[in-house]
Length: 191
Length: 136
Image (cartoon, rainbow over all chains, first blue to last red; front, top):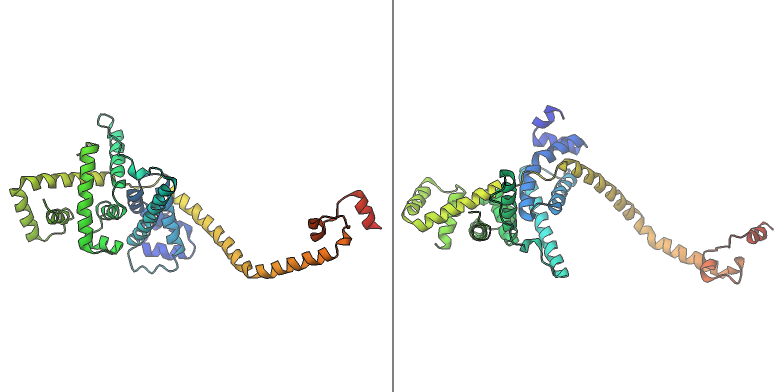
């Protein structure tokens, strides 16, 4: 891939993608994969479902290329799609759980962290435990934690993305962090 | 610790306090060991969240997206065809019923002993004898 594509601005790449330049669109996908992954994996946990929602996020963006006017930064635009799709996926999960009367991943206790393994395994175990703890939060609370703590949006931006008041963001965040702290401290001994 | 203290902590954690607010918060923290322990714990959770942040999906994600878009294009072509031909469906149905009734009325062409379906579809048995009869 040429250096010019890597260094191109989002606007230039979007213009080229609109004209059917697949390489330009691919550069955009690679550029924003990390940001979308943080949102989607934070909301759904790692796995096939998250990968699927991640793909769908970019497919929706591709279909909307002609209409995308760049009012919002591309990252924010993609985060909004990713968050909406993730919340829809959680709703689908809940419906399925109700239908089949089975326990969902969200209810699973977080795995024990590996304290005596190698660094990589320990990091993997820790990450798994954190995602399992996140999955136990209510979706509304989880969304705030993901946007605020993982994606790094400010309170104001998080409020705008979720269409709630800034006070609600702070209140949900405070409760969610307390709940996470309890889980990570008492159940998996990570704190 | 009440809800308001926690919210202040969230603002401090997000670095969204003014200098005066931050100084006041630090003074409260210095005087309150319970709050200090809570603050340390909260920073610990924040650190864990940062370390657990997913950086990517599975390998070749961009390729999977491209394939999916190709699939989506095919799907939209199929949708377009359905959209194009749907208005014709009632006409085709009426025509099919008309032909079926017409065939039924002329069922002697396939023989009186033919079943309903054979008569409606004018399904002449493919036998040597039938071919001979048709040739005559």
